[in-house]
Image (tube, rainbow over all chains, first blue to last red):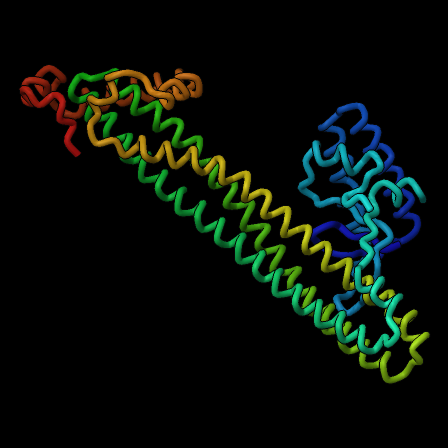
Length: 92
Length: 257
């Protein structure tokens, strides 16, 4: 699965890692819904770390569309309220 | 996994691909797409330049604030030497606020620097992607029929489109941040002006908006502590306060700079 960290770049993420990422994402949504800012930031940082450590950066000469776009790493809790409830970064 | 994809994915459909779908001659459209990418890259350069400008402005303000802090400290000492503790306190309160502002400014400058680096790096990446697109499009034009070319180029074009959109968003984000800083910066400007007051005695004439703000902002204890410390220093610095007062004679108003 190709994942982009917004503002940074694309990574090729193995399927099993993608599964874990999904779990973290679900938990992050839960944290946002519960208004638990600290927990959200903790989970989100874990997501970013997982992508960076277990994903392989996509070469610059490869032109591919991402399956998933993760918000920028300095996302605020307010911004997260939009991104982690279904609207996505850019509503289309 | 629809959850993750549904919530987080922002499928940035490049306009290029829509163009491609309608195009009768993909070769021509490819050339147009490439031109468009090169144009957009120019916008990226402009966006980065804007961030650099904002950063420089903040750095200048930071320097001014540093000067104000030194000045306010000196003024506090002068006021104290003349036995004007009230003025010394006001100067120290301003100094305290200036220091807080300075910290915040420095933090913002650091953030902008990080953003600038990231944007520059992404711009390089973008250049590489555009170059790849250019090469691919020539190959596709030469080797495939119109129908096949359309399919082949779609992924590449969308890939470039996504990269471009992401870079555009990153720049927009950086610009929004600098916009927020501008509001704060004008407040700092006001403070800076207050820090350049020439006549310390004028301060005693009545609280202005800034003074009221100061009263709210300064925790008090910090200022108290610094005031005590300064008193001790000024006191031990040679000569007692009354003597200094006499020495200045009628010049009590003239906290000359």
